[in-house]
Image 1: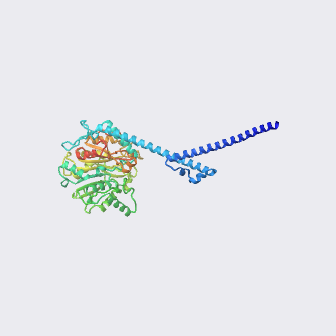
Image 2: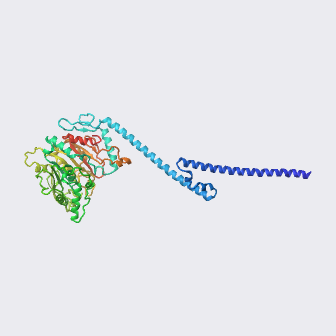
Image 3: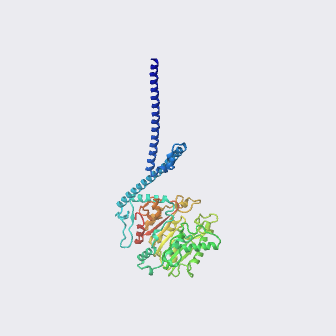
Length: 527
């Protein structure tokens, strides 16, 4: 019986051992199946992720399907993991880039909303001009029966909006006003003809020649610009002038600094009319003896023979360029000038210095009023006689512009200057040694708002001349939207000194010549 029992016992043991072995095998396959399913799930999730990102799963893994299918050797798995990590890193970079783009789009949208709000406010304050007439009436100023433009003023909200926009624009690039586009120069001959007609009642063909005073002539590019605009058939223009300057430098075996002008003036587009010749007198005043000699030689190369450039009382049937070795100031006399004036052509250091300065040279100075009396009013009697009509009074006197304006008091008080253009350069007083009247260390100190107020009292509207946005700037979103060609200063439209870096240019028009003054107003944001 024992053997039977024993057999039964062993049989049970045998059955139990077999069952245990079967159970172990089943869990092994279950574990392997679960692991395989997990791997497949991870692969599928990775594939779905790549698909969502617009990628092909196999490309993201960096292997061919046949290689991936072999998949159990360690090298292939490591390659797959490494490729997946690289793909994930690229995805993270792309995601960061997309987020930056979205953020930038949100910023642009915010700017657009701000612009819309500004435009709404602008419409509330003007229709469509944005400024008020003297009587407080909203809208554009009107030209009265005498042909004069009424004075415009800005309220505090409009002045703040313009100032904020101007400061943003000037923060983009330092020379938006240093090298302006001078949009107002378009069809300037027609503008001056209208002024002449309103002043004399005659058309320009029967009136006196255009009269341009280019004070601080330097290399002569302003003179050349106006001669090209008014009498293009004379063939004196920025392009021919630079050729003459370079020819003179070659003759002297030298090279002049910035011979094209500080703003690349020699590259300006020329008048498309190349044949019209009109009578004009353009006076170039240059205190530097060295620059004066260069300009005289350029004149010999460019202007018709027989034109005595130093004689103002010459035949007025054609355009003339007169060159004067004299400085303009608020007094008549002799003043000391920096030694650079003696030898360096077009040197910006050529300015008045304190008497007794070592190596300084002496150069005569006159006022605009005295120059006009001597050359255009010699046959007139009495101090109250009307000044000649000056179409453009341009001043670039290395920080002494306020003094030149003071010396033009009679001309300006009679409103016989149609337009005035001058330079505002507060940085000159920060130089060592300081010079000029603008800025913190000006001597005597003058602010732009003070000078503009003086001109306003005499009947002139003044604007900060600027550079309008280019199409590529607008496309890249770099430029302030709707930046105007001019920013109005007169009438409380600018209530703080402009935050310009470098120098800036100001252009003004007499309200007596309503059409001219209104033309500038239309080019401004609050005009």
